Image 1 (cartoon, rainbow, N blue to C red):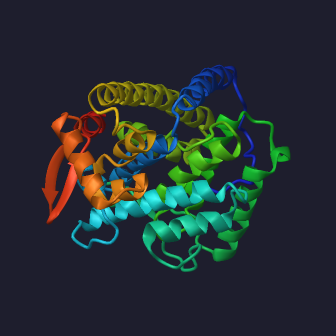
Image 2 (image 1 turned 60 degrees about the horizontal axis):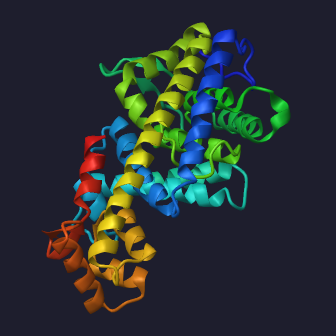
Length: 353
């Protein structure tokens, strides 16, 4: 069956009683998440660690697999890391680029192009050559997106207006996010990186609508756990117009993920309190907010990182890290002739997620 990309908002999308009930529930949990995140003094810790976890999860959907150890040790100046690790970090860079861009400009197509260029490391825009099709695991074509560049341009312009012009619809923002995600994935505007860009678009839209202040709600893990349902429902909208099922799936993904994120943040807060107590009791002269921020923002910390963040010499930073290791808060690990001091409990926590 041929699917015609609809003008937005799509005809037939109604906020049924089921959708409205689920949207209220999801909004409530996300509001709680926003409040919990605000209790972390340095939200950069959440942005760094949760965004890196999302980069790993989102890339795994595209069969780009790496480990937490590789990610936390990654150094852009070092060519010794695997191609998969470098690709995951490009996703992380793209996400952060989009988040920072929203401080000065709206969520427009130009920004999405910048994001996909960072992800793919290619200087290209929308697809200009026909031939793109989406296949299942057996190689069968399940969907053929628009092939003509003029159609893609027109549809992406319509999507951009739908994202930014509140007059186009009065949908709940979470419902609107579900529609935006489906429309973007159906247009499939790029040669590569559509899935990852679409997942970044989700979080950037929530931030642009002030649903969240920082990027801490990521759906990739939920999608991975419910991958078949995700792709089946994407296609069911195209084949049968099953918008209610799709929207309910996305609202459930948002609510489940928000609950998980609350639990994750509370666990990080608890671990920080534990470290803080030990440092104040056993190394009060060494304790500082900058020290805590560094060992939680960089689970694999190096002497140079700590020296820069604390404004101390490498010798002093080295003494601090050795002291932290002696207290059992960090663990020394060598990798490719480089010494790393690992925040073991934090790394183990993320590995267990």
